[in-house]
Image (cartoon, rainbow, N blue to C red):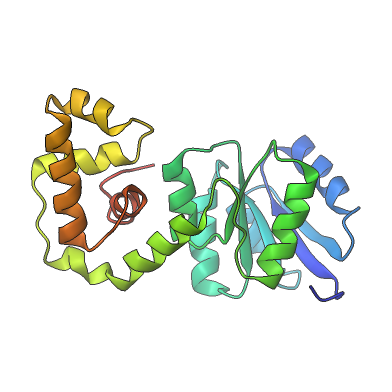
Length: 219
């Protein structure tokens, strides 16, 4: 990574947490807190005052304008900015929605300082930060989904397939999904294989991404 100082904007509505995090980051070599904001609207307002940051560390649950909307706005207006999602939520659907809205990585608020520093380094040097939450498999599924984004224009799904897609975004196993849907595990295998063939996807992660991207599952 270049020795040039990289500017960070910190967007979180919890003041004590935000101030503590800013103090921590001040000890990281090569990084500077450019400004702090309480939510997406406050962030956009401050962009008129400050330079565009290299990294935006973005909370998800915030009043007025949440992390999903802020990430989407940044992707449209400043695609050069590296967005790192920062949250207490480790649900797959939340992770997927932030990534589809433009986040380049996802860090939990209880992560060690070393992981946060590594997230900064890697998002600057590689363009993405991969950890246990955001694996290469998820990123590859996103890439595959983007390539096949027009499939939904002509693919018709049955009600049972839609129901199964919703369950793919939960932590339930396939056997548990079968019990919830009152069908056999073999039938669930059939739903999965049929959907993967129809949508040209290869994994449960890809199916979950499809469900979020096309509004079948709401966060």
